[in-house]
Length: 606
Image (cartoon, rainbow, N blue to C red; front, side):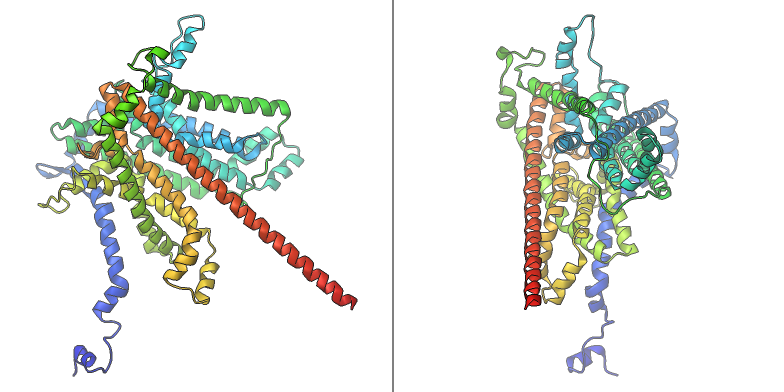
């Protein structure tokens, strides 16, 4: 019997389709390669972290857990973590729901500008926000000067406390609740509220008995995200809690690792597993609650106001909102910038004390700050470009070829972002010191580990952004291109890429901004030559160089605001262009209909 090779060589046929090389190249091999890559990059670090928590000199054991859980300090840290995260979530929900109702339902003026101020705490890094608040409420801050004008010995609020940490965390994370709640508010059918009002229901009764229950999915989703973000946050507890000796799990893990005591990594791994389990438990509770809710929603958002306030109430509400933004956003940032301009910390803000030497130091004299800017921009750019390529391809396959396999891959990709940053950082250390036992590639201690950590942690953001962009384009467009003969690269270059680009760039901007100002992961993974912006600001503040930390933070805020305004201008121009094109198409259609109707009339007259 002839072999397959002989038959092929004689021209009697080709290698059968079930042959191993063809099958591997066409189907199985790419999936196996992708799965191995995901296991190695996304799951191996978590496996190393969990396994270390159960290992001691005597082999597998739970001794690490019993030792850590038997210490009163551990339970004190747990109580602080739950108290601070829970209190911050309450503030975030109250503010987020209130502003969502205000923007979605009322006829207040300046909504677009209000939304920019609402988004501001989400855009500016939390550690910069904390630094701004410490300057505003500090002994030489604006608040202290204002209180000195009042009778009595009034002092500013001490932010280096549990209540201070709860307050700043709540202000930082309320935009998460706002985003989800406003979308749900606008999708609630207007007819339900009109019917309830016609039946004699008051505005307050309708809100508490109907609107709020229907909006619970968005409120619960945003509230749990705010809770998980508070668990994950490292900057605010580090800036406010460490000086006051108030530890939460994220800062306690950091102190265990940098302390390099006996069994430091084993204790840190136990605490990281417990923190990760707490975060995953919160996610499971969130999913369970969302499954029980069945909100009545319309297919599209209704952006028209539903409550028309009188002139006096509207003005009073508008003034109150702008006063809130002035106190919570403008004044802290202004205080931080004022501190950055004084020649020495503690001096009054007067002309004789104002100097630009702090900015000259961070921009031209300090090699540390210049290297941090270069490192952060490189990391953010490379992470964004790699995320755009990999995330968009995955999003396209997930959208056009959905399967349980793709859902499993999405869960694996999303796991590093769902876990707290300190947990992710420690798992990266354990995985990349020796990826293969006995082989150290030199990744740990270099900037490469930061890139791997950023890519692993933020890839899901690009995947979600690309999926949103792809779902907004009707699949019939791609089918029409295929039918007309435009396929392959030409289809992508001429049709799909121009349509997908705006949504993909929005996700890419979020990835770039998040990676540029990242602190939680970087604080544990940086080395002497790979310090980032957040690490340098944190180091300046910890060392007592407040004028340098405020100057560097002010410079970063100005860069972020410039980029944000540029993106906002781009979106405004694109929206106007789309509106203009839409109006032009409508005018063309009306003209064609008019001409057609006129032609029919002329024919009937003949």
